[in-house]
Amino acid sequence: FYKGEIARRIDTFMRKNGGFLGYRDLADHHSEWVEPVSVNYRGYDVWELPPNGQGICALQMLNILEGFDFKNMTFGSPEHIHLFVEAKKLAFEDRAKFYADLEYMEPGIVTRLLSKAYAAERRKLIDANRAARHVEAGNPNLKDGDTIYLTVADGEGNMVSLIQSNFRGFGSGMVPDGLGFMLQDRGQLFTLEPGQANTYAPHKRPFHTIIPAFVTKNGKPWMSFGVMGGSFQPLGHVEILMNMIDFGMNAQEAGDAPRIDHQGSSEPTGEKMEGSGQINLENGFPYETIRALMRMGHKVGWALPGSYGGYQAIRYDAASGVYFGASESRKDGQAAGF
Image 1 (cartoon, rainbow, N blue to C red):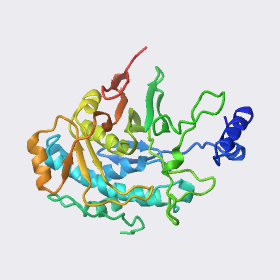
Image 2 (image 1 turned 180 degrees about the vertical axis):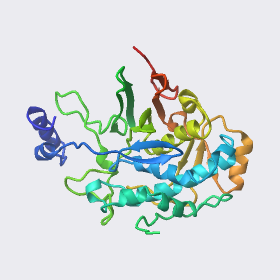
Image 3 (image 1 turned 180 degrees about the horizontal axis):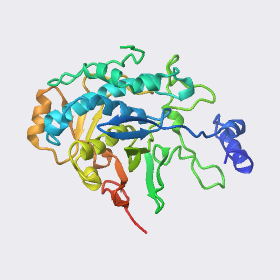
Image 4 (image 1 turned 135 degrees about the vertical axis):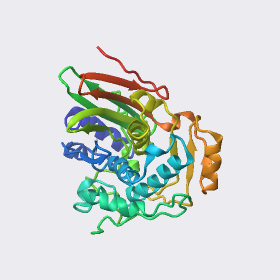
């Protein structure tokens, strides 16, 4: 796709339609093998890819939430939802300020963002009884769309977690003449504001939202999973893991449980958080919980059924060597064994 006849036809199509993507841009493109990053959440090593994606946002949320005792809370209780949303607000402010193409980020910043000490400092900002209306990105230098996800596993113990997206709708909606595929439009997720980590620049990758995940325990595979859904994905990852680790659900129950979303945080594209944002709750949470959240200062609403992501997983039991597949009804999906 990046050299030869197909690339030349894309170049011709873009010039004919006033675009700026040229043959040299395509030829200069290269993919990279990168090392995943992880944090330990209550004995489970949770692995995500580093930026330019948002995987470390889920890890930051887990680090913050690890300091609270969810074992003594009920799933869907006001306390559970409130602490989850407040941790999301803190992590998303860092996401807006710091996440970008890793080559353009400050050296070592990912390690500092994922440190337990940094999470402890951020956790102190959470009021257990009140929704935060103004949140700033932290100082990690302290020394104190349309997406598909699939996961596969084989009889030899190999497991793969994979996600891909053309971004909004069907991507750009532009089809180079005679080629039969649409060009993606992930470049929308740059900001044009000068001096930001995610500011548009030549040969630079934009911030993007797609994040495959993997969990190991005691150095062995435990689960391969992902949640489609744009900016919801880090929230979905954290909810699945909390449902299983803190609330004792199996892989299917964790996906079927009602979900929590929060809208209104600052974004890597330049939008700033205003007020406390809005919690959107899927059907299934009791009205008493909603009233309690409103008394804490949260604005609570409801979103369209397709707004809460789409989850697929393979859970591996090392003792028995058995795989357990999980898929959910919010999106087209299937768990199958052959």
